[in-house]
Image (cartoon, rainbow, N blue to C red):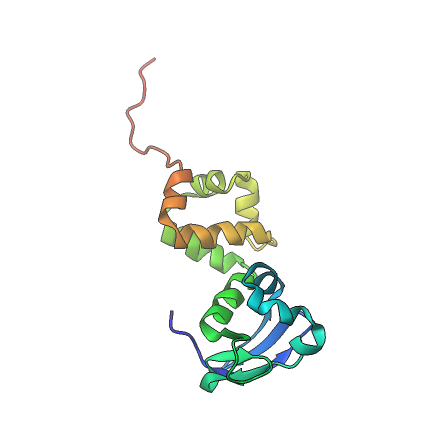
Length: 162
């Protein structure tokens, strides 16, 4: 995935950025996990006064704080990855995932550990829990994870004679 350029940035909260991308589109990207779980280099961003002063740096390829040439920054590649992961997962996304995964409704429900009725409801437009979207996205990125937990139904087995 090519990292888009950042057209505008502002603080949406003490831990989230509102990012406008060149060519269109806007995301509110929550960075609390990024700041809290990465190197101590980002620890200064826990200060809400500093966090609320983001600026575009490196010709639109990053957001920085403080010294424009400093290390206190996040690049647009990671911003778009975080934004994509944080977007809600809709029925259309579920349909695309199922087509890409080439699984039946029953296989998808079993893979996710949910009742078939819940899967059908999600496909019909019911609100999809965040964890379902997370697992579907992770399964696309990691075929080993997908293969380790998928239990395909055997099609075409001879019926037993009774």
